[in-house]
Length: 223
Ligand SMILES: [Zn+2]
Image 1: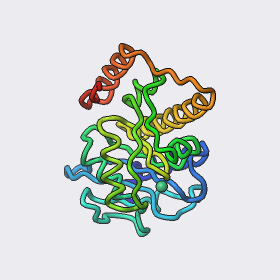
Image 2: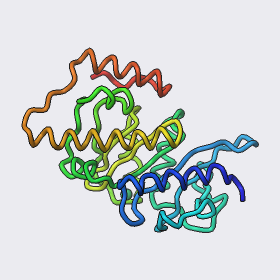
Image 3: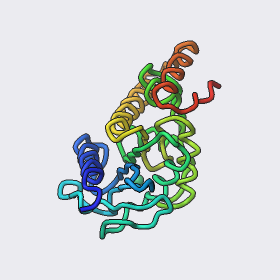
Image 4: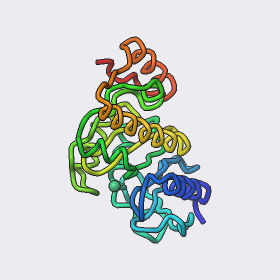
């Protein structure tokens, strides 16, 4: 099988988001970008509508960066365009995970931006969590809106839909998913408790500097 290692890693991360409870049924999708020995960049992505428990490396679809299928018999995830758009916009992102995690969805239906609340949120996700404007699943608008909401950060919410997290590799993208879900959970409960206090500005600045150094991307706008 071509690219068995890269496809197996995608299956492993897809199982992790399923077992973590970040998706139900066949929802969500996982991809990674890699370079073949000849130099061409490719993306391995989960297929559309397949159960995670029985998914194998063979089921993972390999596309080129224009979205042409290179390997795999199944249809790619309907959000393949969103994954490709994120890779095109973000040189240092090599893995993308999209989930329908409960607390991410909870904040996503309120369409409220999450301010920088927790040190780890800023250090690992890049700061505030922006909610992408609503667009239909699988649409080019959703891909554009997700890229805009991510900016140079590693997590965003999708209005009335779910969450997207990025990373330099699958392990980091999964961890960022988990930090995003925790951040959304804390924010939702803090709002119920009443008093949500953002991090002090110097902590936000320090966290964003640490994030930029880790991710290799330009520091997110400090505003
Ligand atoms: Zn979705």
